[in-house]
Length: 147
Image: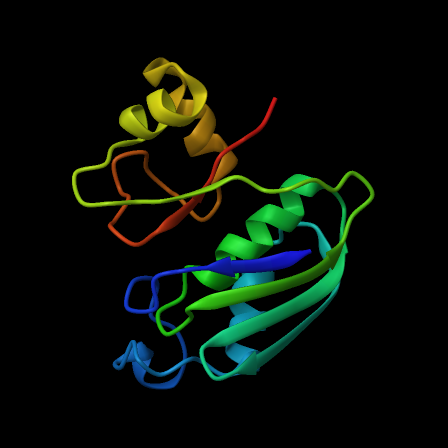
């Protein structure tokens, strides 16, 4: 359970108008639909939007599902924070990385995992939100898998 920061102007544009204004947070129903579209393993998902903060709750099948739900909600244009109230049996503190200009999965892997060659572990940990290891963008928040 926690509050996680995201880059409000970065992320996937969703909702009515295609998220033309990243300064405008999407509606709760739009965020819920986006998170549920990934079929991450979170039951009884409930989403509230308060300004640019998204509050998500539910029951996750695993810590991985919880973390993926957090980044799926946070990597939406117009969202600056995600307040997590998702229950899970094997909970721990998530490790996230905000992509900066010039970052690659190799460099992120070297920084967080001590070995750039483990970049595919980060890619796999962020599926289905990532479709290609070369398609990351500044401001995107990635989940870093823990041993």
